Amino acid sequence: MFVNVGPAVACGRPDAVDVGDSCSHNNYMPTVLRVGARELKTGLGTYLNRVRRGERLIVTDRQQPVAELRRIEVAPVSRTGRLARLAALGCITPPSRRLVPFLPIRVMGGPVSVTLLRGREDRL
Image 1 (tube, rainbow, N blue to C red):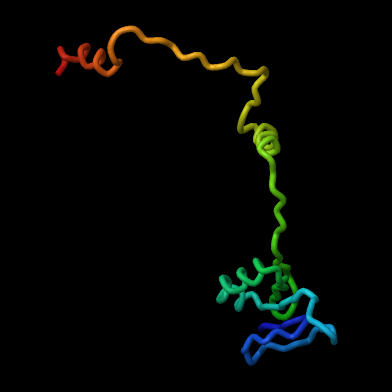
Image 2 (cartoon, rainbow, N blue to C red):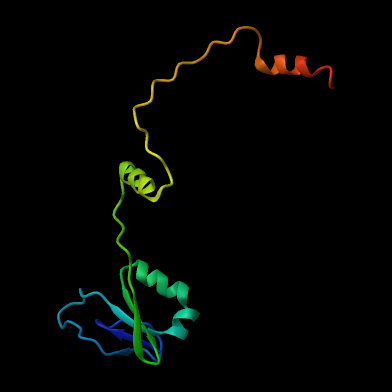
């Protein structure tokens, strides 16, 4: 069952019923939809797209509301915040002191690949 609660929405379905409190002068109110569990399962992609656009969805089981689907407003998290969360979970260990700058090591002689091949000549 599909029931539109709020401003009238033309959905082209014969079982859609407008039972909501729509505003008489404009339709600025957010739409709340009621949908049965079976219908939600059948048209999940369509309903998820509607939720992404900001609509709320009430899921019913035998005409009894059991859940509400709505868009999650995720605030951006800084790199410091993400690292603090990972440290709290024990996934990383934060440094105890500042790292010293990297200093490249000078290598004397030829390339390492040539030296390795020379060392393996007796095995090849």
